[in-house]
Image 1: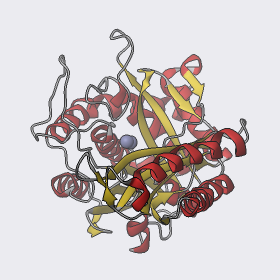
Image 2: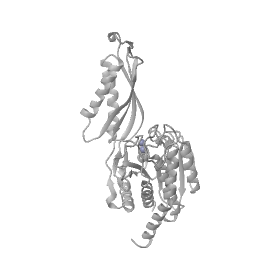
Image 3: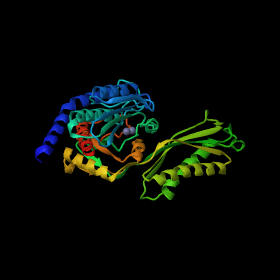
Image 4: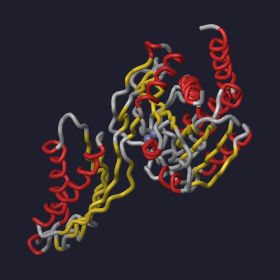
Length: 397
Ligand SMILES: [Zn+2]
Ligand SMILES: [Zn+2]
């Protein structure tokens, strides 16, 4: 590399170095003050304030606590969205050796979204400094409520995706070591839906079950029966999951409950499978319940489609990652049955969602995302910023 390309390359590195400390500080500030889905007021305020300071035109309160910040280069070109989710989880943080801990009891950034906001602001700051080398517009999208898959759609309904030509987003990924980036064309995360089923029986005396319809026994049968949707109806080559995460029924050991409720989630890599899983859960729950004289009612909750990256953008991100960490450190991501409602933005404009390794190399096996012991390696943050900046400059050339 020589001439203008080499010059830009060293300017990118200098900007990433310059922003390193601030990005880390921002991540720590957010980690210390985590906020639950749709309550991200201080986080949104920080994102809005920093974006304004960088010269972006900011709109707050988009789809709840969402923030949209635009910067126009003044030169004709595409509009690129950099999307970062902001919410934390209702988890009591545990574990030693953290550089920063949550100051809010029972709330924790256990998925790395603190880092996502910090990296987006870091990339924005570098793009402002490199303003002479790109055309078009940059839109920062700070999204609430990713964890409940209910933040993207309200933002879209209020215009957040309007005029957007390309979308880029990062998920920090602790199972992947720091210094590695994983990119994949096509599906990277599966769909994620929630549902509930109410089983209406007829309560009675625990000693005289023949005079009642026991919803607990029906619930047990429903739970087992719906697992056969995965084991007997779904191709082993199409990953899918049904999990019942909560079961509630009853008041006492000797009382047959009147009704029971199940809450669950379905995950699928394939969009058609997504719909089929939900339909079959409803059908089987209804049929099993009626077999026992009970009645099942199915409700579909919030959800999002699979996260799909467009091949051209994935290719561009792969090249950006290679320039950042070297060819040997870029992996092809394996699709995962976790969800992310960045999918809703990616349905409206082509783009790429990719994984930036954040696993401490010396700490051994990393606690999973959403674990009370989850932690990220902050050395991952500049890797994310640099990859994002390089990919953005390629989109906005
Ligand atoms: Zn999460
Ligand atoms: Zn997440």
